[in-house]
Amino acid sequence: MSHPVVNAMSFDIEDWFHMVGIESVEDVRKWDEFPTLVERYTDGIIGQLDAHGTRATFFILGWVADRYPSLVRRIVDSGHEVGTHSFWHRQVDALEPAVFKEDLQRSIDAIEQAGGQRVRGFRAPSFSIRPGAEWAFDVILDCGLEYDASLFPAPRGHGGYPAPRGIHRFTDMPSGRSIPELPMSVMRLGPAGFGFTGGGYLRFLPGWFIRQGVRRLNNQGHPAVVYLHPRDFAPDCPRVPMPLKRRFKCYVGLGTTFGKLDLLLSNFEWAACETILGLDSPPEVDDAA
Ligand SMILES: [Zn+2]
Figure 1 (cartoon, protein in one colour):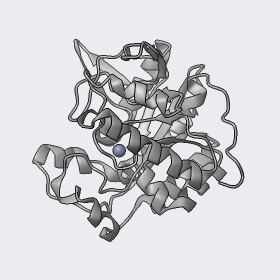
Figure 2 (tube, protein in one colour):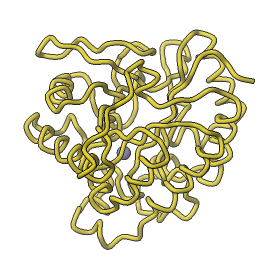
Figure 3 (cartoon, protein in one colour):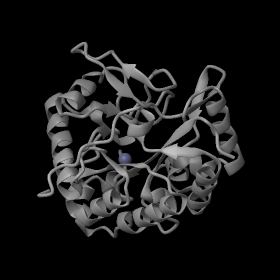
Figure 4 (cartoon, protein in one colour):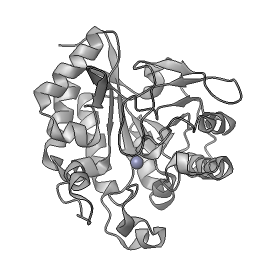
């Protein structure tokens, strides 16, 4: 049943209204008035991971850590790694470096204060580090982070970067430094590729196909990287107006995700991103936090 390659299990912890490029949810002043699902479904995810004894990484939105510090505490108390998913969920490559730095630092502060565990990893909202935004890696290092898990090595709506498909060091940053990179899993189909281990792809594709894809990656020596959001598990996720294609991707298969996660947890070995990257366990932040 188990396979020698250990795969990365990760979740981007944000609410249903943290979507890039959807006008009706863009105004941050409305966020407090929307119904919320982030706590309920994150607790469901924690429970399922618990049942399988699996440790995962939760890339938490700083805004969520600020509003629900006890949720961050529950994630940490369950033994998981916490990373950052930025503070405001803005597209990285649409920001000025100084603005991104301020946002990223604010998110780190909020998550560390809530959870008392050091933040080491970053995942960009909508995988929005594209060619031309390599400066973002310098900001990530300048903020004291130790790895990135933002690159999506295939074309997609708001991101996409022609990165190698496995774990590597990203070296193309302006300062000449380098940083460990854990890119998303892509299935090659001729010259093209597509994701299959997270978000709309995982909800849409049948479980046997995803399992086959993970097995294939593992046979090639690569870990798979699963990335899911609380709303991916939420059949009651509020619907908002959006173009037809986007609507399909947003809402397809919401009732299938817990089952597919269970299938993956049962059939493969999983660990947190920092473990997959071979980084040591993080030291605890002061108890005062
Ligand atoms: Zn996100």
